[in-house]
Amino acid sequence: MPDEGPRPPRPPHPSQAQGGPRHGAALSGAVALVTGASTGIGRHLVEGLAARGMAVAGLARTEDRLRTAMAEVADATGARTLAVAADVTDRASVEAATAQVVAELGQVDLLVNNAGLIDEFEAPVWEADADQWWEVVSSHIRGAQLTIRALVPWMVLRNRGRVVNIASGMGTRGEPDYSAYSVAKTGLMRLTESLAAALEGSDVRAFDVAPGVVDTPMTRSMHMWQGFTDWTPPERVVEIVAAIAAGELDQWSGRFVRAGKDDLDVLRSTSPQDAARQLRLRPYGGADPLG
Ligand SMILES: NC(=O)c1ccc[n+]([C@@H]2O[C@H](COP(=O)([O-])OP(=O)(O)OC[C@H]3O[C@@H](n4cnc5c(N)ncnc54)[C@H](OP(=O)(O)O)[C@@H]3O)[C@@H](O)[C@H]2O)c1
Image 1 (cartoon, helix red, strand yellow):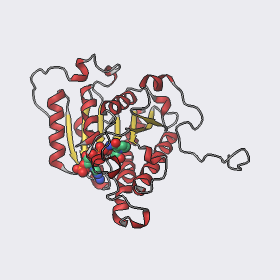
Image 2 (cartoon, helix red, strand yellow):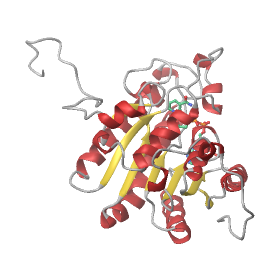
Image 3 (tube, protein in one colour):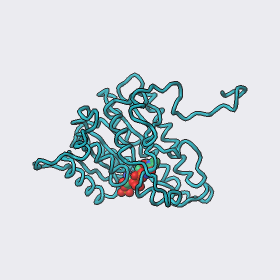
């Protein structure tokens, strides 16, 4: 349900009170859809984008939690929000949810594929439960492909739009105990690169944004992060996604950027060359015939 009806004037959201985002005006009135919006990074993204003036739809499976989150964001920011409950791996649900977003908020300018699962137990590939393993892979890859399939055709028609796939450092290397997640995030990076390549020449672009290590229900559930304290502030993720939405990082389309490590001003002023920040085989030396 959209958050509708007259609202009393509100004090500025904290991000606006501090002077606001550099290019907030570019986002005002634009529409975002964030998957996995009910908690963790998705919840932070919804709030940060709403505070920058976007109308934001959030998607997740558990309806009550999602509705509560979207209503809280509407209250905190004064932005228009919409909760659409769906499983990103269910094609019919994704098609219905995206159609509802377009009908109620308008065409989507920013799609953030953030929903996804992690391996339930730390275990090598051969010990992992086969069904849960595929559920993890599917949540990231099938989920992103279905939302892209539903929304990018309209972006292409309008020659306007940005897709952000939430990536992970674990997609850049093998992980002995989180193989499904590693496979999923590697595949997602290739999906981003393929999408960006197919969109070349248009004003529709696609990016991998790795959030660092953010304190969320997912990281709290992972043995490897127990006792960890050096969390990436979620605002670092939000500001990169907002800059992408505002068209400030277009030269990074098809490539990987990392919140908490990449400086936004450096990203803005850098044009990556060749296959920088893309997945490639590294040659073993000058004699490597694949080099
Ligand atoms: N936290 C980190 O440090 C970190 C680092 C690197 C990458 N990431 C990535 O960032 C994203 C968010 O991570 P997080 O830590 O915020 O995770 P989280 O706390 O577990 O939140 C996941 C969100 O996704 C939703 N979701 C899960 N499966 C779904 C499905 N099939 N369909 C629709 N919604 C689904 C969940 O709601 P429901 O369960 O109600 O559906 C929830 O809203 C993930 O892609 C993750 O891989 C996180």
